[in-house]
Length: 306
Image (cartoon, rainbow, N blue to C red; front, side):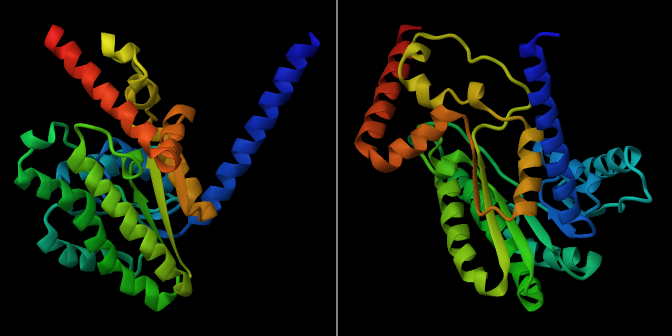
């Protein structure tokens, strides 16, 4: 065995040990905790349910489709040791139905009498030019991505405040940090959510309640290359070729678990280029706006040529 091979194996061994220790620490932090996950039937929701269930949390899984919730329940209990885990509780919740959220929150609290961790995962996306998106759809996006999560959070908050403990997690998006063209409603809702939870974090410190925001780039179920096109060869792709910089739901779920375990305040899950875009927007806004405008012009030109 060469020296290089020995070094590589040694590094791999250290990384493996580090990951195992990190997992055990994260698992111990959520064991026996009451963890509520909204939109648990989504791809990311399922992965969050899996890692927290394996960690021994007492799950309350929320979703708008009962059959899919039952299927998730069956999938979780079929692969874990029942003596080491808790059977999840299921609650129907449509996060866009604001008028019903407070009643659903009571049902959630009745499951175990308290909530230790609330994971706001539900989200709705829309893509299109500003002038093509109706005001009704704008409002629906705000309900799903902003008013829904804050209404549920406000309903659960008194229970946490009275116990002086708890953790609220918002799974948001990098678009809560930077606006990407043709996603105005989505970006606006994500910006609003970040503003709310940043303020909430400061206000809850006196009650020892943690507030975390996890901001991934594009969440994808598999990795694929972007479709070819002339505009993809421009500087525009350097910042906003979202698919190639997407993260898998498994990665996000594991980061959410680590965030709860270590009580991180904010996490930005992005490769160097999207991460750089956030800082450029902050420190060099004129450059950022010029790049965005250039990308729009090139994209429109390519569409006209086709």
